[in-house]
Length: 234
Image 1 (cartoon, rainbow, N blue to C red):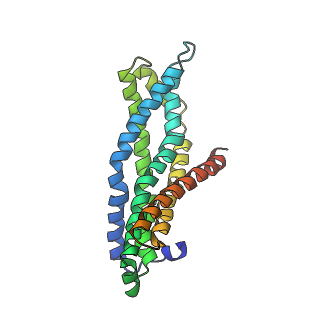
Image 2: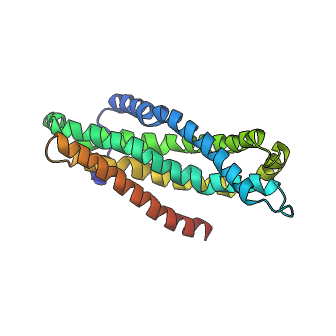
Image 3: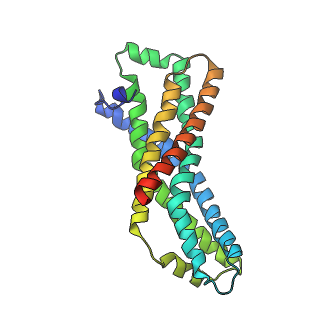
């Protein structure tokens, strides 16, 4: 499938139009759920860390430090990708699957269109280019959520939290998170496209294909996360 996907588009004007459409559908429309989850999860991580670090000998700035590392290394790139796999993956599988069921793909092929390239390549490029920005937004809002948690509770002060955020900042961890994000974005675009494109049957199979796409995309992301962590941080 990928051999046909990564071919030169037949009409660049049509490709650019599809690309901007996919950036809106797969990226911009996901900003709301990403922002909401990131902010509140960041606050929960900081508050739970503060509850567990109740020893007076442990400095409070470690709460901000632990929150920063948790969000950058794991939550933002991995768990947000799994959330996007559920939202975006089901959309991709169902939209392409519906086109297959209603014979729209067959009609495009009759006209001589490379349907794999026409339908899937814009989705791949849109996710790979746009999702790193979404993950950076998730990091920023997660850290802001932890800061807001300090305002609402007496577990730690905002000053201590900011000191922890600044403590031992490693730019490589940002690059590590973005590398994982790019790999996961590719998975989110391709696996659901596969299940939607090669769907056989009717409308019931569209729902089943969407479910399979989300499940297998999540499984592949978790598996790749293990190996990428070992290779990049091991």
